[in-house]
Amino acid sequence: MLLPSAEEAHAAALTAQEQQLINHNRGRILTGAGEEAAQQLKDLAAPQGTDNRMVNPSIPGTGNRICALELLAGASGISTGAR
Image 1 (cartoon, rainbow, N blue to C red):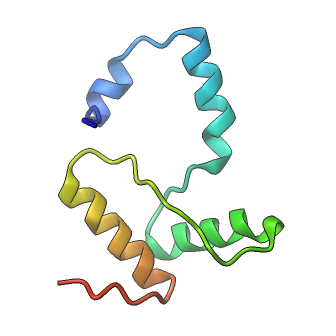
Image 2 (cartoon, one colour):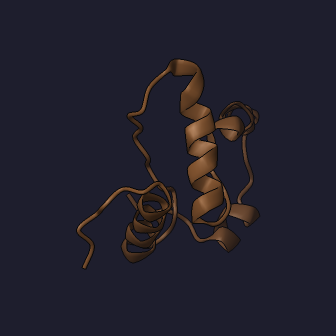
């Protein structure tokens, strides 16, 4: 799945249904540096009492997604066996 660049996403016209979906999901989106995003993920999972989480980075570019996951894992104290 190809993701639009930030510029393309900002320029896109959204339907009311798309905007409603974005608003609904906004509280489940992690932003910030590794440590900040790791804390947000921990806070998001806490009410469910789980220590298992699945992350799907919506970032354009495979290398960028891999980098984001490695940074988040490192900030969370998870060994990735990264390159």
